[in-house]
Image (cartoon, rainbow, N blue to C red; front, top):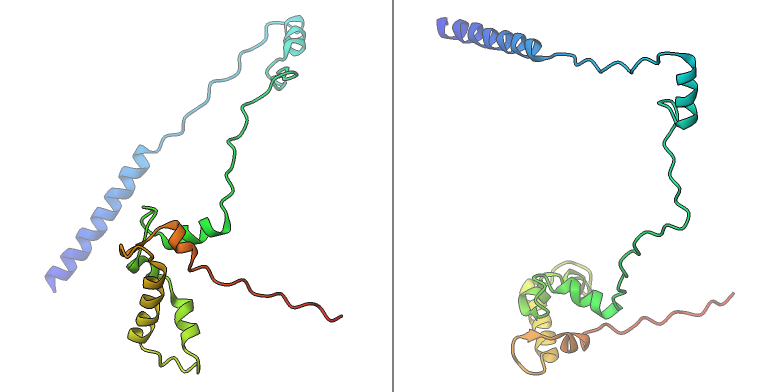
Length: 160
């Protein structure tokens, strides 16, 4: 019981010491007062030249800033390749290709019961990878990866 009471008193003591320490360190800084103008004629000259109440002006006519850098537009296939290439080495390994194929997993589940095993999905993806890997070096170059491009969906014509 004594330890609990002493612990509580020690905690209160530390909190109050911290509050006093923080209050002692807080100081309000005062700004420098503006310079005083000696007479009205000097104040008039200052206002004509752009005194302390007026905003500074600059003549920017004829000035031209630097041109922004040119943006390069990536093709659709380059963007698709970049999504798969996780380590940006311009090669897609088997692991990189399989890591982001969840949509393909959903497409393989024909009956929609979510009972497709990972092994079944991995076999289908592995077959697709080996079909695209023309030189059998266990990585896809951008040209080899382009062969895995999904076929474009046909747009239905409006029967309005």
